Image (tube, rainbow, N blue to C red; front, side, top):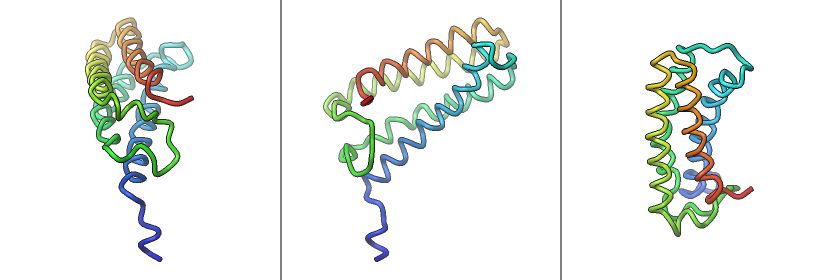
Length: 134
């Protein structure tokens, strides 16, 4: 019975990537709220969340190993594994964009943070448009 409850490697990978993506969303949301005027701009808070985004971004690709196309509910399209080089390039773009967001947040300049956040959002969109099922 214990073996039947052990998640498969594919299920573990799916849970890992979903957790990493949840962390991205959790940390981008407060910065986005600041940029929309829904929360006061706080450079220190923006930096904290930007650093966390930068730390999590490299974890994304790790969550998509071969054989994890299915095994648990997932919105990942099979195109990821057919176009892994492109997927990895898009993930690398996100890593660069999150580094830029950290630098912008450290500047304390709200306008720079907004522009850098837009760049991060564009990397999210580029991947979601091609590789995430609706």
